[in-house]
Length: 106
Image (tube, rainbow, N blue to C red; front, side, top):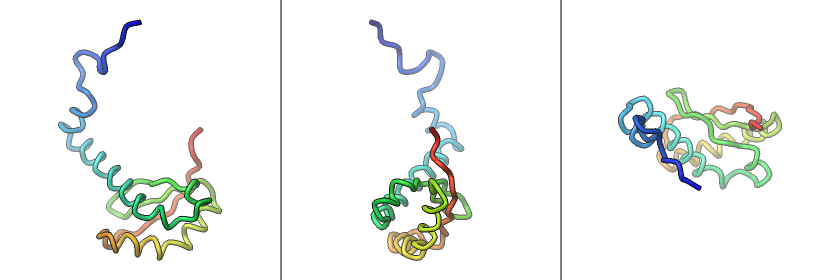
């Protein structure tokens, strides 16, 4: 069995492309920031709710949490003050959390 190269000759490996492209580097930075925010608040989510929530995009208007269904979104809205306070304690000032319903992709 032969092994295939990690990238096609003549193309850039993903890591190099991310380093060389400002838009891709910014996208990677936003993804990392979203994950860091989620890590900061996920312990505040009840265990049953945690499985129904994913981190969403960070943009100039705030940060989104993606709820798998309407019931999870409703519970998240109840927890918003607590989640936003936890983010402020960790230095994320003035960025609101938006709740979006987005069922997981199969």
